[in-house]
Length: 132
Image (cartoon, rainbow, N blue to C red; front, side, top):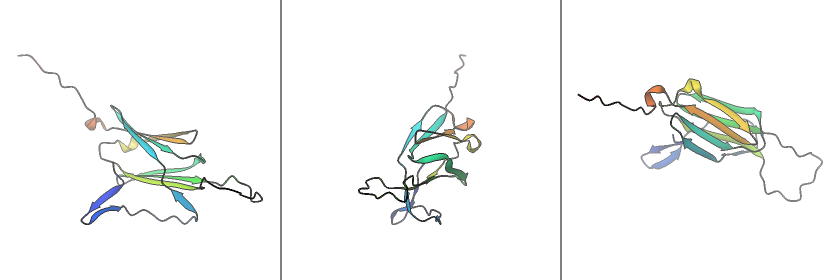
């Protein structure tokens, strides 16, 4: 999985769709773990409600978009801001070793976990040796 492609002159970001909503868009930090029968993508997306997450898989590309609503009241006067408010957006190229029909996701305490099950043909298997 990678979210960049190689070009002759070096590395360039893949073209990403433009969003019509104004404001900041952040790239969430992720951990990717490989287990025997699945890959786990754990994305840090604080401030996003599960209903405001859009996950799509199309043509080998997994797209994660999380919409953040600013919880501050308009009448509050901000004296210092160290934490930016904005949506989250990230894409990944997924290999054919993943069974796209079995991708699942859950959100707990600002952490989005995606489970990408490996296709049967991609799972390691033990081959028994017959004695003759």
